[in-house]
Amino acid sequence: MKKTTLLLTLIALVASAALWYVLGSKKQKNDSGINENKLTVKRHSPAFNTTVNEIISQYMLMKDAFVDSDTASVKTNTQKFIRLLDQIDTLELKKDTQLVIETVMHTVKDMKSNASAILNQHDITQMRKDFSSLSDVMYPSFFVSVNYQGQTLFVQQCPMAFYDTVPANWISNSEEIVNPYLGKNHPVYKAGMLHCGEVLTTIKSKQ
Image (tube, rainbow, N blue to C red; front, top):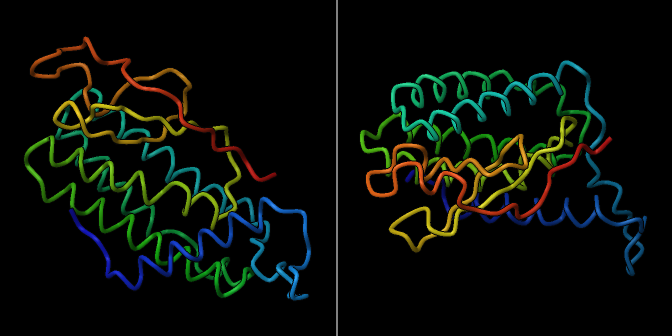
């Protein structure tokens, strides 16, 4: 699966952790007197939020295609997903701090990299592995760094996504488990494991 350099990954992880801390804390300064508001993501315009929500909606179409084991539909929707990522308004991000901007750009780069890897695969299991990597990049980093404004979403996990032992996560717009890794047409389980999984957490708008 496609990955960025270790340095960029570490930057994104550190930035994401810092953002989570700040957004979840009511403290304005740390013990050293440093103003932590400099890390806060500002509210974005309706147009920016519309683009973000279109990206999420396109991700959901990718997920649904995996549920159906429809590789042609997976690739078609993945191509649209990548095009939407290119439409993120970088000028809008200048309202935020440099740390936020860097986190968004590195995260989007990782998202495009993993989505592009899906397009280069022919085996659906390998495509699903890249989809798993994409999902892990999106949550929490993407949602936090863009100050997500949209409907409540659910981070879900299949405990046996790969080889019956390896877990994998995905994001859903429904609390109901509809598993994109085992799907409706699994070679062994057929649709018997379609609802295998659990909700790990929810993603709520930062309004």
